Image 1: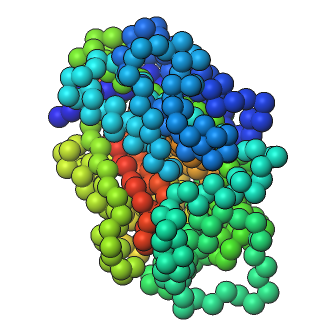
Image 2: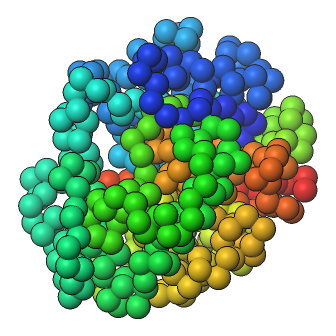
Length: 414
């Protein structure tokens, strides 16, 4: 049983914050998290700052956390910088968790902050995505990834977008592989996007807050077949902060609002074939998290999965054991994963509609789950939520993501 709990969370609304800097967004999230925890700044003994884009787009390659957090007033405490692609802030959380478990610190802070929108640097905005894979092996890895989608023909007359993240080509190849291997359909993939867009209507922090029908998703502008625009996460600016402390202090200070960090598993990619999907790094991370938690997927009440594209929710619902391999499309089509269903997934709107500020995304998933486990999610509340799971992947290496963190949270007092 771990000894660490979350006592405070805070985030900014997600969207295009052209008038705010990384440190502005970080300060807003930190202020909210400290207020939520009911503590002052001087209680924080160490901090982890998570960001992926400041180096590429602002030239702030090093000491990003020191720059942003010193501006907030943090002095002398240890500050660690974590850049692990889209899994940056969940990786920062793992490191902070380990430090509290080791007894090095009593109360610590994890901050994810990202600006992705720089209108005057549009080419650089898209070029920055290439920093999240092995640049030396990029051509080899991309060719291997795209090849897994061979065997499914693109329908005649489809016009694909000339401007897109290379990761959308990868997700499209993964979708085609799943269609070829398991018979997954475009409508099942679209059902994920429609569900998550409809969920985001209930989330005041979401970048997009409009509903979408399944047909509207399918008929949206094509990015790369079978992925339409509505099936892709937007480029978002935003920040999130999390305060962790020892369980003893958390329960004394916060009572039932303290959320126990029951299990966490981390993995990186391996040399496997596309057909060895049961060796996917997300399955490895999930198995490690379940083992630490002493639980299985059947115990989970609510989940946030890394749906940078709609197909990813289907893949990861299988990887974390919510259904058998090949059944992720049928799972979402059944309605089980929508709010009010047997296992609600991405009731925040997910990355697809809530937003995806890369370095902050993992922390934002946990913000949603903490809110759910406290029973404070309002109209999007999952009734009786007690055990929550977050899956956060980052980058690509070989045939899969480069990093993955799976976190399991528990509402001790519910």
